[in-house]
Image 1 (cartoon, rainbow, N blue to C red):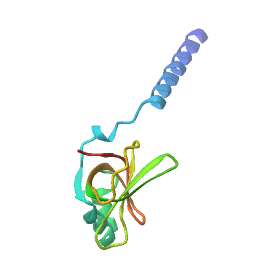
Image 2 (spheres, rainbow, N blue to C red):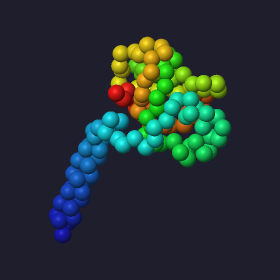
Image 3 (tube, rainbow, N blue to C red):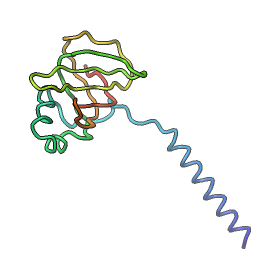
Image 4 (tube, rainbow, N blue to C red):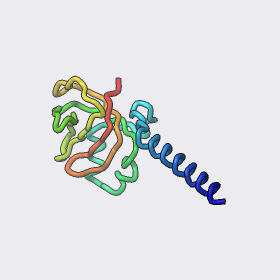
Length: 133
């Protein structure tokens, strides 16, 4: 009886270990593979957050957003490339943290970026971003 119990425990440990290894090494889906939930202009996105943050969170938070606008600036810090999109009025911008480094766009260039909205601090922040053609 003890022999069968030890075999069952060993099988559970092996299955649990192999599942944990698989999940740890599983690659996350690229933003390109995810369906866009909302398409919006950079100025409209910031304006929505500045006027009513709770309503904007309901509409945009943790959703895949395709945002279009003009490049304000591009910078790389700690290996993460960020592109800032210009907005009209208001003090905030749209900060897009790129999934992988790209050739830096020219300031003033029109661009469309797809990313996941993580909310509003001083800027509306999108992560795992990719440029959409």
